[in-house]
Length: 109
Image (cartoon, rainbow, N blue to C red; front, side, top):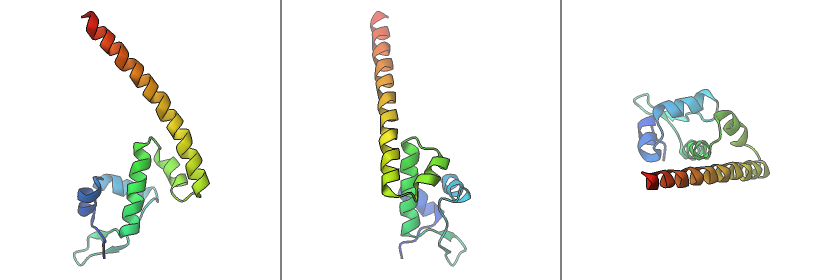
């Protein structure tokens, strides 16, 4: 069995206990069992789901959006990701412009 405790999730996935508890509170993930010490366990499906949630957050989606996307059909997820990529590209252009302005400022000093 590949179930993990919260501590093991943190070590394996780099996700905090508080984040996982927030995912649980939002109804995005749930524990699958407890070990003999009473520690909550997350099976492989829950771990995969947590990884997906974390990726969506890194892409800029809010938990409310993730709650909608996590179980949505592939075409819905694909459309949302394509739209988010456009947002991220605009942000990237903006950041590139700021970096260029910072370089220009450095050269004037």
